[in-house]
Image (tube, rainbow, N blue to C red; front, side):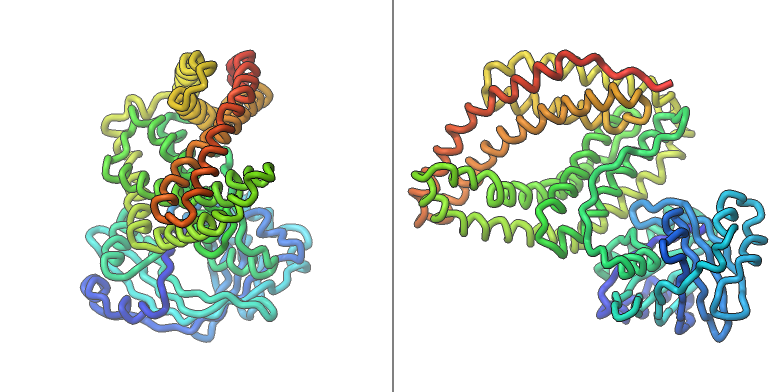
Length: 508
C-alpha cells in the first residue's frame, strides 16, 4: 500500500524548498535529480479508470518501469493506494509480469484478463523534472519529491508543480507534521488530484465540475468510530472537490456546494461530539471557513436570485436597475475574498491539522473507546429519534411565522436531514428517501424565507456604503420584507406533509 501526501506550490517557490533548512536538517542536504517520462495506458473507453485503476510505464535513468495503482482512498491530500511495480523491457506494459506480482490480489488481477492487452493505448504522457530527498523525522522515514513539468494529451497540456511526501516507514501523521513545518515558510495547497486524474481530465476536456454530497460508504456492522470516519470523509471530499470551482470559475454552485460541505462537516462533528470532540481551535477555523463561504454565497444569492423578484413588478423595476450593479460588485468581491481564503496558508493549515487529528482517533478509541466502539446502528437510531423529537417540538411554533421561530426550525430541520443522509445506508431505501425528501421540501421553503431575511441585512449594509442609491435600496428592502409573510403558507404545507411520515426502518 502506497501512502503519500500531495501538495501544490508555486513554481517560484521551488528553490525555497530546495534550500529549506528543514529539508537540509533531516536529509543531510543530499538530493537526487531525474528527468522522468511516463506513459499512461488504458482502453479507448477507459476500462481501467472506471475500475479506479491506473497503469503507466515510466522511463527512469534509461530503464522502463511499469506501475499499476488501484483502489484505496484519498482524504485531505493523503493518497493510499494499492501499488504493484517492476521493470519492463520497453515503453509498453507487460501484463504477464504484473499478474505475477498481483498473485495475492485476485480481484485486481482480474482487470488484466481477457483482451485488455490488445485494447491498451497510450492515453497521455507526464514529463517532469524530479528532485528527491530521503528524509527522516523522528521515527518516520519519508521520501520527499518535488516534481516540475506537465501532463500532455495531443495538443493539450496541464502544468505540474507539486510536492509528494511518501511514507516509507512510520506514521502517516508524520507526513502532516512535516507538511505543517514547511507551510510555515512556503505557501502550499493540499491536492486530492493525482497526475493520472489530471491526464484523464485532459482526455475528456471535462473542465471544473461541481461536486455534490455523496452518501458515505458505511461498512457492514460499523462501529461509531468507523461511521464517523466515513461520514467526515464524505464531507471533506465535497469541500475539497469544489475548491477549484470557487477559485477558478464564477459558477455560484461551486460556492454553494462547498459551503454545504462545510455545514455537513460541522453537523457531523456536532453529531459525534460526545464520542470524539473536535478541538475547539479547529472548530473556530471551520467556522471561519464557513463564514467566508457564507458571505460569498449570500451575496451571490441576492444578486442572482432574491433581488430579481423586483422584476415581477413594473413599479419596482427602476429600483432594481438602480441597485443591481452595486449588488453585483459586492458579490464579485465576496467571491474573490472566498477564493483568496482557499489559496491562503490558513486554509491549508486547517486541513492539515484537521486530517492529522482524524488520524489520532483510532488510538483514542483504544485508550478510552467505549462510545467509539459502540455499534453505529444503535447510535444512528438514537440520534434520528432525538432529532425528530426536537424538530416536532420546534414545529409547534410554525404557525406564528416569526423569523426567530422559523430560523430555529430551519436549523433543527437541517440537522435532522443531514443525520438521515449520513446514516442513509443503514435504513430501508424507500422510507429514508421519503423522509429526506420531506425534510428537503421544508428546508427549501424555509430557505426562501431566510433568503429574504438575509437580503434585508445585506441591503442595509449596502445602504450604509452607497448613500447615492438610498431610495432604491430602501424600496427593495421594503418590497422583499413584504414578501416574507407570503412564504409562510408554503412552509406550513411542507410541514404537514412531513408530519405524516413515520421514521424510517432499519435495513435488513
